[in-house]
Image 1: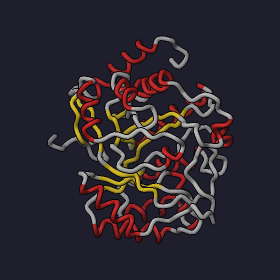
Image 2: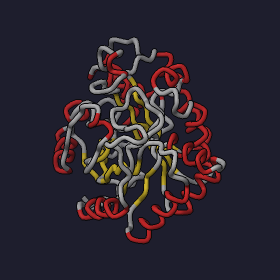
Image 3: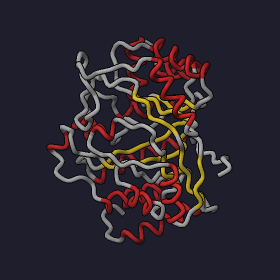
Image 4: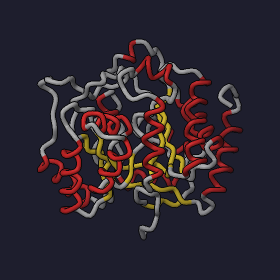
Length: 334
């Protein structure tokens, strides 16, 4: 399928599988906010333009009052969740995260979809805890679900080349399997177009599919393309993934990962028009209006969308727009 020139055929097959999972013609979206609580990081990933090394004058840890203001603004805009992610900070132990989660839950009625696998492995390491105890303690403090960030390509040859200090493939797997065992839902992601082979992409798909087969814990799969501008890796990747490659990868995601209910068509990196096309290539969700986003934009991508723009895009593609929550429940009356 990756080597096929029949893009429309792939799209039609993916669309047929999308209809099996979602016969009602609904395409969902969420109103939430990505709060990046710190940009200090010790991993120096070559594809990231967001992080700052320890001691940098441009580095920050957000004060709790600023975080609370961001959450209140999200709620005022109709938001139902926060995506809370940051760099891997060597001095923030689990108590810092527990205290923050408890404070958020005491003050706000909002879903906390927080901390990617690399962050959780970092919290466990600096706190001297097992992975299971770390996730359980975060859950008990108010963590509701875990995003799939930090996956990039789940192949250690690729990871060694682009993010050799970050958690390995097995550690990413362990975080998600452990979270599923503890009754938590997570998402799975893939960042492609960073010089990996088709076989390495398939390694990624195989891992995600097998975890889902065993646990059923993934709510969604979200593929997106590497943005090379302003990153050190971009000097070695001469061409970004094309829109055709994005649509092909999205369609294959829907076809191959038929045990995952939701596939997200992204607009943040490819833009609104390609996202709209993606709804006929297997996508049944368009993600968030992104009240705030700092990581991808740091790499040079600045697409933006309001709720009404996303709803119009969905309607114009022939679907019914519905706001959802983080677990993809579309119970909102709109």
